[in-house]
Image 1: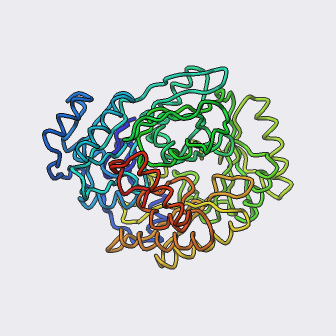
Image 2: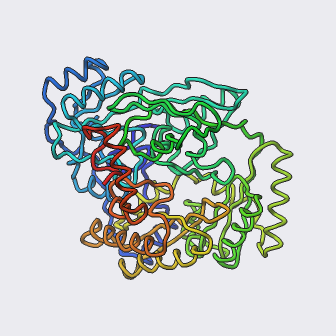
Image 3: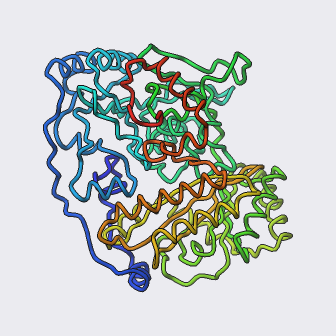
Length: 523
């Protein structure tokens, strides 16, 4: 599998494919289909803006072979992989391309590169896997001598393993599969498997507060982090010296979710687990989304969560979105829940029996292991399906939030209505819950609608309406996609004016010249 994603598509270019016949048949019933497959020819970029002096100073740190200004390298480090990102790229707009791609090999080189950036006032965009879907890789250019993509692809080491304390220290450029492979050599797993797992990086997981599909069992990524090493323009900082501390506010939380705006995370110490000996994923059917959500709440508040717990609403279930290869096929109706169990055979058996008893008592019907097997087989495939839909002239995008159990239905209804009313017929809105807590849960929406004459404008209008609805119901503006530039207009609604000033004060302290990912996160 290629680790370089195509500039106008998600994932491995070799996996680009047309819609499956069943899916295309469904799409043609609902939407006007216009094949818009993008030509493979490269988009020409304007010449870079960096002076010879800046390039020499960068090369003095990492070597000239690791300072890249060719069009191909710059194209591959342009923006992220949201639908707006891809629509702009497919229209030939790569105006946000960095002027150079610079690849350090260790913390000291990162620190030295930041010194060069400050000296010449060059904006720096840390780059891990390039999977941002919120404009997190689009730095502001105004007032800067250029923009550099600080590519962490050479920083892929497993720096330390403590099998007694069950921690491991990883470099930030490791992609998800690479990190799991290194840990597997020690019989360990991180257990963090977001949909972007195949391409996202350890540094990106930390910088965006990522949450994986197994969060019910392993926890969100920020909950797995014990320590961080960060290079900032003001100097290095090392955080996390014990499993718990009362030494003032937890400064790790300042850099977790900081999206490259405060510095570059150069090492992450994480909690690890023994690799599971057994994995079992069961399917369950509920008569309604509310009934399934109530069951999730019951399990969470009884501290009886499986490793994986997700619930599709009626629309998502009807489309078989859990199994991309079967989209458009027959559905058994209701709402599909997947409950997955990982661990030793004894632990899996005990937890599976306990959870199954609760679900049966609450009225669920078992669907056996087949739905779970299909979900596992396609768990990372949805972005490829999104691209195939875009090829057919269908606008597809996602958004997410989280809220308390008492507000879940109200938020679900408000966001669904905002999207359908803004996009009009024949838009489709699907939703699932895949992250649950004792106090609440996430809501992850998928939207499909005809592209029309202005697909980008249509989506941005719908996204604004959905975000306004999220804020109005008191939900968070993002559960795991981060803020980037896309969610920044609503950040003050969530954290308040004083909160924004706190973020700005931290920025002034660690990045006084403002070279770190300017325009991202911090208003």
